[in-house]
Image 1 (cartoon, rainbow, N blue to C red):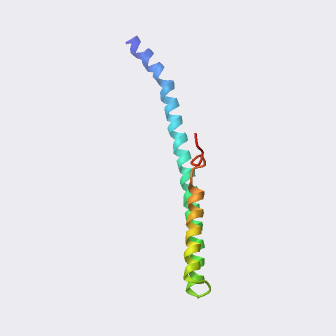
Image 2: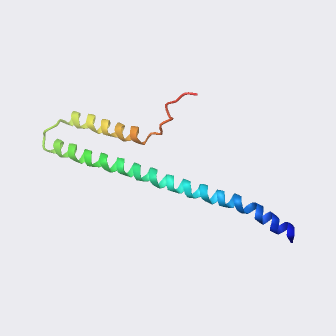
Image 3: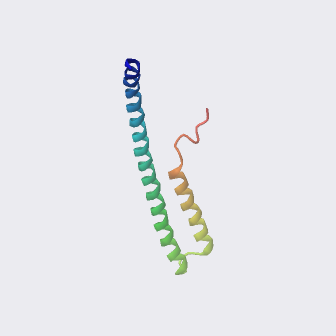
Length: 88
């Protein structure tokens, strides 16, 4: 019985560290998701503005396609991980 208590007392710090790491990962994911949602929302608003200009005939279809590609590229760059381009 004493061995069981000793083993449980040894496990408690590891469980506490594990719970802390899980909480930190959860908080990090919430922040990342919020940033991604904000970037996508801004891009959607930009595209609505350019679509309105296209519908009004103020920009051509080719210009609209170019803008759409550039906005997509901008969203991709903002969501890309910073170490993706680093070669080891």
